[in-house]
Image (cartoon, rainbow, N blue to C red; front, side):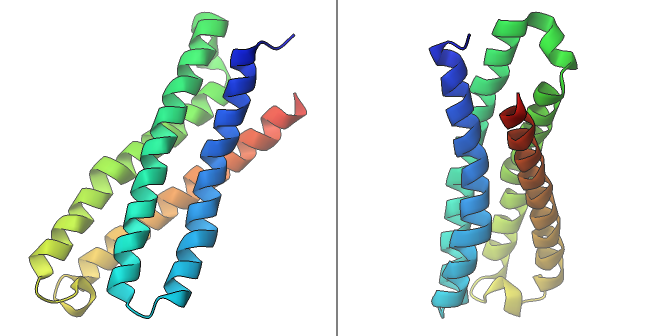
Length: 151
């Protein structure tokens, strides 16, 4: 029988994965198609990704702690724990590894937009790496939701 903390975990997992998909694959594409100022759209998208990233980290901390508290050390060997840990590591890498470098490139490019500067190639490479990592995190989240919905 599930307790309220199990239900909270289900809601948090759903919210975390839902925020990944809603921000990355709905809100940001709409933002870029509706906002003619690409620099402003990029700034707003970056802020949405940051908020979603921090939210995901909080959800991951709760979910991983909940698994450890309910299953003990055996949780470390379960697929859900490992998938959530991988998702958390990806979120941390994007938030504290890739994004700060991209932000620094934007500052270095001033007064130009980074995409109209000599730093555009490096920025594009980092943006691509971030996009691939985000896609992997999103797919892991979808897999985890599907896997846990069957249980």
